[in-house]
Amino acid sequence: MPPFVTAVYEVETTLGLETVAAEIAGEQSSGTFVAVARETPELKSRHAARVTGIEEIELSGHSPLPGATGDWSQAKRARLSIEFPLENFGTSIPNLLAAVAGNLFEIRTVGAIRLVDIELPIEFADRYPGPQFGWRGTLDSIGRRGGPLLGTIVKPSVGLAPEALGELVTELGRAGIDFIKDDELQGNPPYFPFADRVRVVTEALDRVADETGHRPMYAFNITDDIDRMPANHDLVRDAGGTCVMVTVNAVGYSGLAYVRDRCELPIHGHRAMLGATARSPQLGIDFRVFQKLARLSGADHVHTNGLRNKFYGDDDEVLAAIDAVRTPLLGGYGAVPVLSSGQTPDLAPETYDQVGSTELLVLAGGGIHGHPGGSAAGVTAMRAAWDAALAGVDIDAQAARVPELATALAKFRPAA
Image (cartoon, rainbow, N blue to C red; front, side):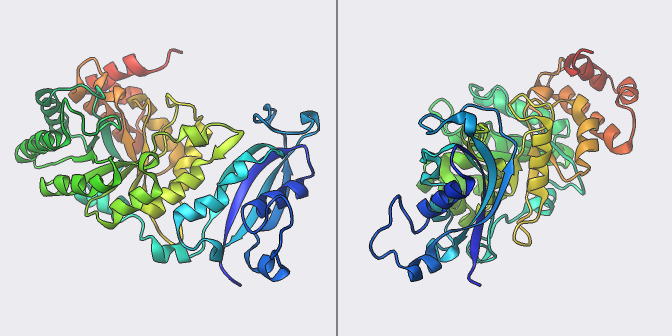
């Protein structure tokens, strides 16, 4: 049987479910709104998308999308599975997306439509090599034997002068942080050009390594116009850097794959802008699809958000996202789940209990830099909390032994 891609959608419509499923399959393959000349049975048998599953599910209770037709009181909701012949677009992520996530979002007869999953044939593994480093390579680069890896984001996000950034990186490194990253808002600004930032940070990291024997990984944000990103990578590599960051949705999967083909360092894949396509229950593309294509395109680390995060996803969504990143893809493509957004020491026991794995990169921005004792104290508190979680020690008992953790819990723990 020829290879195909299976796309899974959740739709709501006032028409028959079979009718709408056939309309989506036709619109996104060999058909259009009317039969046309040369649309032969032979052509359709080879190139038409095929509906393979229709499962009616509970209505969402949300209003229909603008422009949707029909009497919404008569709506039905379903999960649809549709097979697309690989021959239609080949092993090309951009052309794959045109097929499984193209004009279908504009079809009037659907009042809601989300692409919630995608299954790819093994042929994509021949085109896209995926992550170079993953969990084991990241550990080796940092010099750690196991996880979780504890990290932070440069805060304030923008505006730090070179001297202040150098002091911050030095303070964090001396405190034993594993990982530091640029905020996605940091690129190549006139007030602090990228090349200067690389110089300041690597000098600070070198000082820390000389003093402590430990050199944290720093993810420099190389996101830029596609033709500039390889030079940004090379600048980091030549300065002795050990990680680069790419804002995946800003440059697209092709931009990420372009960097991966020219990259010698782990790629920290940021999910900024994901909410524009994933947040609405009525429209868009689920995180499950995003993370598969990000890993396929070469991301070694993929942001999932964390428990009780400051953004929109609830804990069940976060746990599903972490599980998705940890699930093998095409026999491999291992990537590191990155927990972030409002993470504090108080969350360590719950996170470890719920996730059940140490193969995590846990980032705390405000949860470290907002510590009353400063960033170094924030690192100490975060480490103590996770040490307690891994050892099965009550976090309050740990706080009685580690003053920095006690202070962090007093500041960050939600009021009872």
